[in-house]
Length: 114
Length: 113
Image (cartoon, rainbow over all chains, first blue to last red; front, side):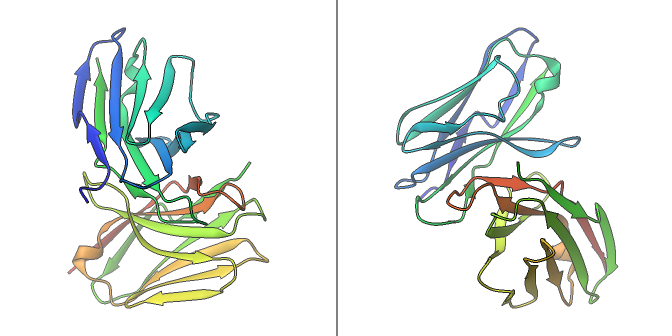
């Protein structure tokens, strides 16, 4: 298995532009998580899905952020419009639905908003 | 909601020494406590975890202890090596049935030879 796949690995954009981050979880995993990592705030849980259904989006910072999971093998995190303070590394992780299983992280997308 | 505090934020040790990182959590319903290691520019990776039905778990040079009464857990690394240098994160699950995690702010461990 290739593990969790994220694209793009790096994204540089200008303030006000739309940004779409993509994630492919490990095949067979039922949970998918989106995290944001910054020096100031550490690793923050933004939203997570179970069987493609959003369970908790209380970590999404603003309405500018949205996430979807149209099928078991694909999820997107969209920021529209982007702002410089959105600059961070965004990680996607997945895990099995069984009781308290390991979360496997993707390589992350490093986003810079100018 | 769950809150996880982690100390220290930085830790410097000599090769061969032991390193201890401590975390406290707020929600007594949490029952799963993993530790992740993140090397510079890489993804976080699980190194060890502990569930609330045990007090200690070991895996070679690393061990984790859990005190449910005091709501704190610790990571112990013995015989540290330069390749142990990384950021270490503790975490706790948000609710008893779920796998969603809240992470501590991380500890930067530096092992000098």
